[in-house]
Image 1 (tube, rainbow, N blue to C red):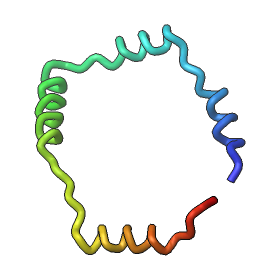
Image 2 (tube, helix red, strand yellow):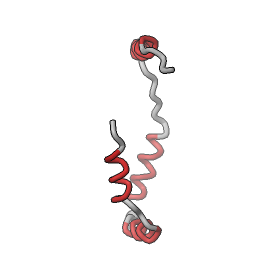
Image 3 (spheres, rainbow, N blue to C red):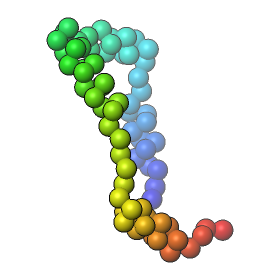
Length: 70
């Protein structure tokens, strides 16, 4: 697969320091939005992901079946 689109997009998406400062000023949240954001962030910090044993087995079986690259 070619990296052509990546290099093209990277040239189109140049961000300057003034762009970042402007977007930070525009992105200020209201007190209510900030409170909701903090609540959501606190809840997300408590989420734990643990894949099922069957899922892990499939992943390891797939990895074992792939030939090693030299």
